[in-house]
Each structure stands twice: as C-alpha cells, then as structure tokens.
Image (cartoon, rainbow, N blue to C red; front, side, top):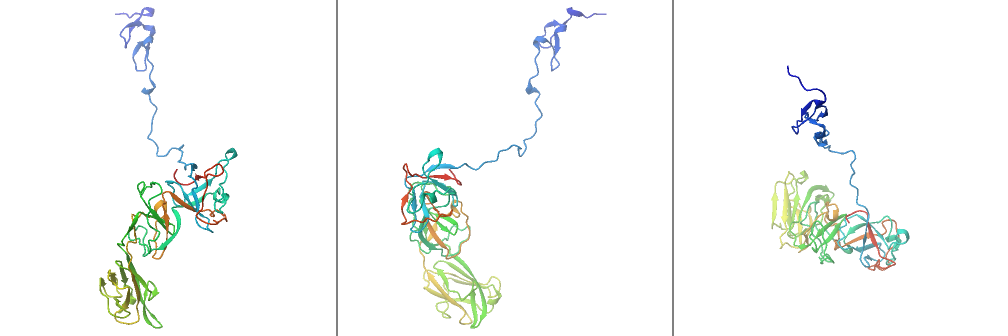
Length: 394
C-alpha cells in the first residue's frame, strides 16, 4: 500500500501556479483554490455588494426648493416719475424688468454705514421714506396714464378677438424705449397693455371689428300702461348696436307667446328686414330674432311687437372702424383673465416691458405729488435707488 509523505517533507501543488510548495505553507482562498500563502488573493469588495433596493419615490432628507432670495438691482438715472398733482402714483423705468402684475418691489437709496441703505431724496413732494417703505410696493406693469375708454361689448375670459374700444385716442402703439422680451412677445416687439379691473391685456395693434355678438333675453310683462318688452330685465331698454355686429333677441321665455318681436325704422313703424333672421315661435324654446347690422343701416332702429303697439324701444346704431385690439394676449404679466361687460372702463398702460407703476401710499403713507410728471431718484452720492426684488424674476 502506497504511503504519502508526512511532516516537513510533504509537498503540495498550487492551484494557481502549478508549482510545488511545502504542505504546511498552503492555504485555501475565498474561492476554494488551494494556494501557497505567497499567492493568496483576498476577496475584492465589489465581488460581494451590499443588498440594494429600488429608489423610493420620496427621500426622508430632501431639501425642498426655496424661493429665490431678495436681489438688488440698480436702476438708471432718475427712473422714478410722479404721475399727477395730488396723486401718490409713480411710474418707474426699469429696462426689460421681467416683473409680473401684483409683485412687490422695494426702493432703496445708496448704502450707508454698516450696510444700512439710506432713503432716496424726496421727489415732487413724495418723501424718500414713503417711496422707500420697508414693506415695498405692489406694482402693475406699464406707464400709468390718464388715457381711458370703455369696452363696446361683453367679452369672456378666453376671448382674444372682438375686444373693441369705444375710442382709440391715446392707445396708439409706440416703439418701446428699449428692446424688451417676455414669454409672449419676441424681443423688441412694440406693444402696449390695457387694464380692465385687475386683468392686463397686452396688444400689438388695432384692426376693424370682426365678431361683435350679443344675445338679449326678452320677456313680456304687464304694466300699468299695458304689456311691455323687458330686455335683460330692463323695461323697454334703449340698446346700442355697432355696424357689422350680430345681435340676438331670445324669445324662449313663455311670456313672449303671441308677441313676435320685429325690427323697424320707426317706433311701431315699417319693419326693417335687412340681414334679419327669425326662427321659431315666440314663447317656445329656441325662438329668436337676430340681426347682423348692415353697414348701410340707419342711425336709429327700433324693436317692436308685430301685433301690439307701444311695447318696444329704441336702438342706437353706431359705426366703429379699426377699434379692435389685435395681437391680444389675455391675462398677461401673470394677471387673471376674466369676463368683462360692455361699458367697463379700460386704461392704457404704455410700454409695460420696460416700465411699471405703483401707488406709494399703499403702505399707509400720506404724501402726494405737488406738480406731477417730475422725475427723480438720482443716481449720485446722495440718492440712487436700487430695487429689492421680493417677488418675481431676477
């Protein structure tokens, strides 16, 4: 029977090098190989990774996005101009400001000792303390003007055509003082804005009216002087039509039964039929009389009952040329688009890309301008406002 070598004379063959080494100098590696200790290789960490799991949808130590910090921005020479005597409103020029409606700015003069900012010098009776109030002032893009008019017809919150002004005087577009850019117009596009209630509407020009439309709800009520038409709940209301506009008298209300409404050239006179459409039976659903006012229509029309006299009223017909806003963007400068009724007051805001206005009394100040249209604010060693951004882009 064969005998194996024993003791210090025993040898073994390495699984790595194939060489013979003393048996008592051999070791077993992590992978099971029998090797000499001089050939031993330890296991690398990447060969035995820790267990991993799918990334969670939310991490316990996240850092939520923080609002941008306040930032200082220098304004140009004499950027603040008082609006009018007795008013605390000022207009501010800030090139391509990028600010939004109802954001806040704070005006400050040159820095003083220990980083404290001084107030600017008074401007036309408006004290530097009021202008530089620490709470800041709410702004509206555009130069505040005395130019106002009214809206010709109702508009809804999404309408971008058919926004027609009673007058264009003072609403003309002038090229911006410097090229500006916002997300809805390319840099340097000449534009103005109008403000209706709290909504800003940007526009680039004017055009002829295209789609004036209005519907009146008609019902009949018995009064002390007989049956009368009530138009939108107003007895024998005097209406205003614009040439090329379309107007509908809805007679769906059951009270209209037996009282077909017609248009005429005189009160209870000859029926006017140009571009007039009559549908259905008065007093039933869907019944109406509709007119698209022709360019040749007389200055005065009338609505009447085709059977009974004394029920109708007067329609004043006007012609408005090139009074419709074009290139319209509703709810511009982050204002909120909403519905507006005919007759609503509209104010022109000039060059809103590079200017904004604010009421410096909005934080409780009582100063008002002495003269109006006086510029100030420096920039020199004693005054030179910078604006502190509290809301809005850099």
